[in-house]
Length: 139
Image 1 (tube, one colour):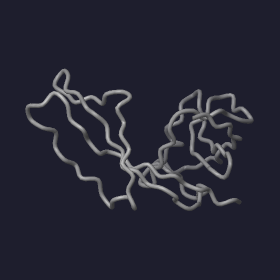
Image 2 (cartoon, rainbow, N blue to C red):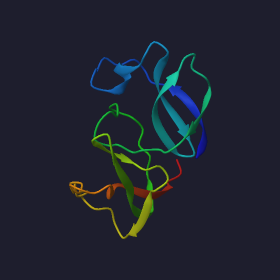
Image 3 (tube, rainbow, N blue to C red):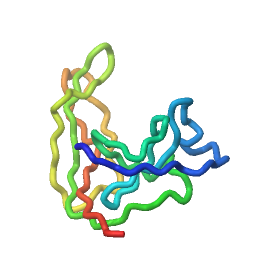
Image 4 (cartoon, helix red, strand yellow):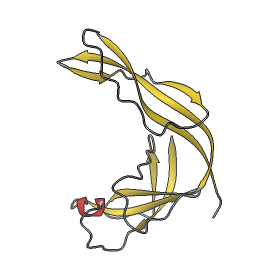
């Protein structure tokens, strides 16, 4: 996915609990705005007027969002559980690229079950994410 977004630098803030405190010498905290979506980003300096966002957009309402950050609102039109195939290697489990499976569900579970991997298996399928289709509410 590629999305062209307009950038706005966040005002200075003294609250060190939020990602703006983690900005490096070559980045600044900013809001990328596109099609009704506001995304918190660490934007490269010098700050450009716009930016192309690529990849997967992850929502995390638990940590790292500065107070007063604009909300994106809308209606969820579909929900899927996402699982990945994992392979054991070097004593650890690693996701296998390109193996994501999506299972349509009526609603997202309140909690994802953290099932332990099998003791003596080479592969393991693990439900670890929820994907939602969001119909953005116009401003």
